[in-house]
Structures are given as structure tokens and as C-alpha cells.
Length: 178
Image 1 (cartoon, rainbow, N blue to C red):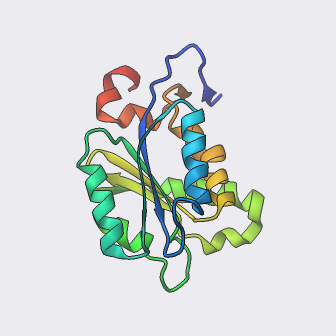
Image 2: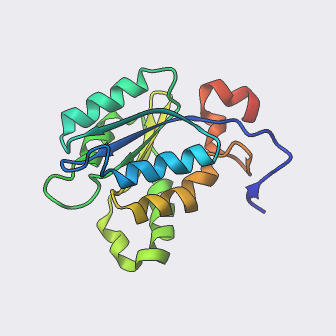
């Protein structure tokens, strides 16, 4: 049965949070704050936090900086995944992917279907691997970030999750939880 194996050691990941928005600032960024609170409460380390405008170049610049930083294992982004004219997060990150994680979108939409119904179709949530760094792009609503963390990422990013966890694919943890 899949789940957390409490007999195993928890290995915290170093996670950066990127908010993509033309209107949010540090004070009004509720979705970014929610992700920081959730990952910290789970025992992971906040490796960085930034807010960038809905612009391909700005998104790519921040993502590339974190990918080049050995202190970042995972990037969580929030915002820019819808169908508004300025929503460009998937267009910014997909060209950077070494590999796309198709299953994340499927599982996120299944989880989201249970909370928002068919409105989940309006999300272009995606994930992939850029070099050795994983990135998960969530919608900008706090509800979507809550669903994404609570129902998907909290488990997949926990090194104790079995039958396997993404933590085992992080280079510094391969020998410990692979």
C-alpha cells in the first residue's frame, strides 16, 4: 500500500518558491506564502522566494538562476498557468525542460477535480526536470496551491513515501533514498 513509511529517515529538500504575477507583492502573495508555510511545516528548507511578472524572460531568468544554484533541489511556482492573455508560465518553463513530468498534470487535475470540479480544465499546471532540478508549476489561487501541496506534492516530495519518492532522484539524496 502506498504511503509514508515512518520507519525511514526524512530527508528535507531545499525548495524555492516563485510567484508569477503582475499584481502581487510580498504583502498580497497569499499563494506563495501558503506554499512556504506548507513546505516549512513539512520539514523542508526554503531555498529562495521571488515574485516575477508574467513575462517569459523574467520567469526564465529566475528559474535559470535557481537551477544553477546547488542549494536548490526543487522549484514550486504559482501563477501564470491559466488562459488569461498574460498567463505564460508553461510557455516560459517548458522550453527549459530536459524531461516533462506528464503524470504531475494528470494527478494534479484528478485531485483538483474533487475540489473545484471541471473548472480544473482551466489550469495548465505542469512539471518537469531542468538539469537536476525539478519544477512544479501550480495555478495562482490559494485553493489550487493547497490542493497541489496537500494532495500531491507533500507526499511525492517526502523521502519516506513508498513505493518511491522524487527525493530519491535528487542527486545529493540518490544514495540515501534511491
